[in-house]
Image 1 (cartoon, rainbow, N blue to C red):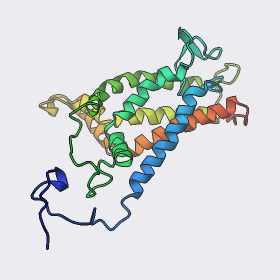
Image 2 (image 1 turned 90 degrees about the vertical axis):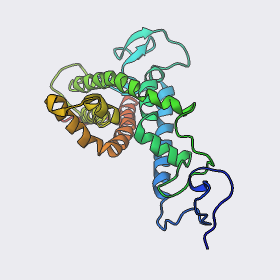
Image 3 (image 1 turned 60 degrees about the horizontal axis):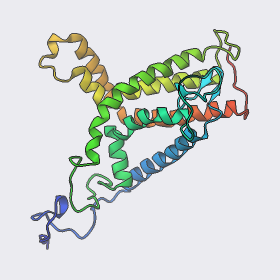
Image 4 (image 1 turned 120 degrees about the horizontal axis):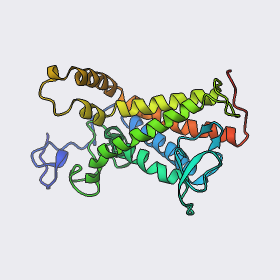
Length: 268
């Protein structure tokens, strides 16, 4: 016999909802997905935090780590930066840059789902109730700050342009001659493409292109762009993970080459 709860609450604990002893009736291994999300975010996050503060081996001409581009402080490695800001320990060049891509991903709709489920169990999976007794959504501080996502989106477009420029520069050899490429060139090109794909598949991009239009028929160009953004948006989750992991791979590759762990294989 199913009874009705009497305590106050919301969601599955609300008055009038059936009381079920089991936390969920799902019989599959629903916990694997939030576990995988959490471990991936934790591993990549720890590595990127290390990369931000280590402040060395981030430049091997013509390769520069995406974590340190553009290098804006006065203590940048020679020929790697612009030197706009004074050197202040422990502020590294990467610490100035990471604010914006990290802000974009932390407030991203997809990543919010990933880390809400993995770290806050809010909820841990579909048809699995969250641990909190009351649901407030993102209407109060600090989660209401997630609304600044759109501003991070526009700012990171500038960084994507800079990283694309870095990928083009990577077609030079160590002496600065054009028409050469190595494995690092390929890595930097793929990284730039994935970052553009991440921004292009973003919900904010889709809204910026096609939002607030009453008639698509009067805006054929924007409709075409919106259609392409919509198709990419369906793969936003996969692109989000691929681009995040590849940023770490790109930094690691350049760091190993710059540190002398191995030589960059040259294609031509």
